Image (cartoon, rainbow, N blue to C red; front, side, top):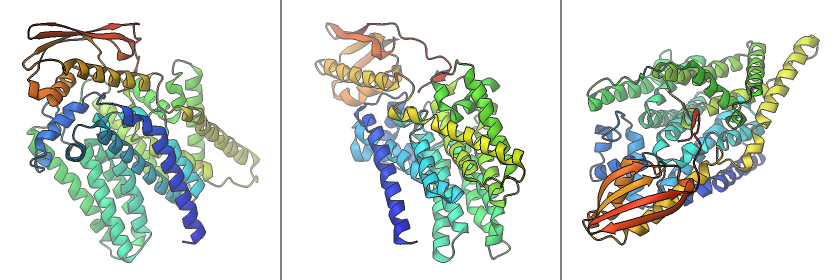
Length: 484
């Protein structure tokens, strides 16, 4: 690689790094406001004396999930930064940054254009659906899983296009990334079909007739080992099916992933028209590139990457859209659109063919440009960051009230905010921070959105204290979209 090319890569990586850390830096000011965050951290704290427990126990004692890598990350966070939320949020931004770098590398492999790879990484990093996932510590399993999948494919592709020690190191890195993806969340197993497909398509680059088996076997063994350990730890097959076959929500989920601007205006009918036009353009360009062998490889890969989670969510059933469900979907959507945009347009021998493909590219270009106005405030759906900051302020106020209580005080809460975050989260926070005082949390009545808090007050009678909140407005319902 020439010095000029190295310089361009360094410039793109540096620019992407600065943009991500600047835009996501406000997250560092938040407390443990994310739902279930303290539940996960509390479970990890108990296991830091014996790290093997992260691999032999479920994520938390209340949840039927076996996610050892995610649980281990909380334990490492606690060992390094204790109960300082900055360390946990720093780790979440770091994971998102590494995932974006993976999209940059994979984007270059897909398009062979550094500018397109940079655009793809930026569109992923600042997609308005993703920041709510990054700020919630308890949703780290989704970011870790996607990081693992992206780097699994990027390093596997690199392994098939190099030789010697570099090939061996790339294969090892891909295998480790797959281990992270599967250990972070069960859905990381969708990477296995992607690995098998890439191995099959690049079998001609392998010298030995059994090389394709040897390259795929480590990934298969990891998947089997995970499933066996999951069965042992959970002691039973846990069925995720909840009886909610909501196909409409899956279509809405896909629409929001392609046109995130509709997350703000999903009630407008033109959003569905734009979605239909975008899908039509994608199908048209895919058909036009079917004879391209390289596009066949990437097209099928991205099709499986997008389709398998959708099938999974259809089987599981989802009662509402959650932003974190989109995290795994955004990289293949962005890279597929960029691959179609950078594909060669045929010469105007057949005028209709060239005009139609050019028009489809214009449509996809408009789709990507439609994301740009959101970059000025990527902190999500309206009010999300405001709500998180309000919840953090509430936690600080709560700490100041509790600090004056004597040991053995029984605390009751009336009309406390639901965003902080629920009863168990509140009890864990008080027990972790004020365990020396042996404060007992009594009844908890969940109230409203913390943005509406006008005052937080406490009344005391002997060893009994009641903390209550008054509100300045009545919060509105979120609708179909859950910003947790």
